[in-house]
Amino acid sequence: MTHDHALDATDLCTQEFWDARYDSTAAVWSGNPNPHLVEQVTDVAPGNALDVGCGEGADAIWLASRGWDVTGLDVSPVALARAAARALEAGSEIADRTSWKQADLRTWEPPANRFDLVSAHFIHVPASDRRVLHRRMAAAVRPGGRLLIVGHHPSDLQTSVGRFDFPDLLFTADQVAAELDPDDWEIVMCAEPAREALNPEGKPATIRDTVVHAIRRR
Image (tube, rainbow, N blue to C red):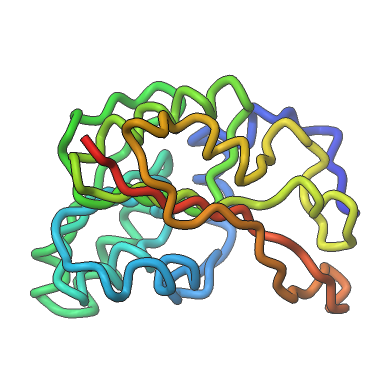
């Protein structure tokens, strides 16, 4: 496993950390939309969406290509500039359907009852901040809208895949679902599917994702 004792868990949430990571390479991520987003949203009628922790913009651009109007939110201006450039490369219609906003997700306050979809993939902050973030994300969904939260499962720390050794940053599907009032939310999916990945040595490892998809009742 990979451990970096020079870092604190809160360092992984900062603009400085992510600006440095994005500045270190031409592309941090694959450029493809997250598979769980595609699986859960392909058949959903488009509306307006908030992509929390949008990074280089692949999810937002995919949503825009399917008719969604998307706000991409990220702590890193470097990532957002890259996302905006890639949206423009995808065409003027995609660029017109996407907008980009810089914010610290630990303190950001979204507009209430605003979005048909609020989506966050692999956003990991300390547990106390995570509960606040998830509550704010849920409040930003309008009645009839959807909340999609995907993360790395705590069991990944028992694999060779190389997660930072900060258990407080990881969470289960049941933990996320428990944050949603059943009177207000219908849980569409609460699961921890396995998938194959490569560890830092290029060897296969089985990891799990945390996936919660819910529809707001009221």
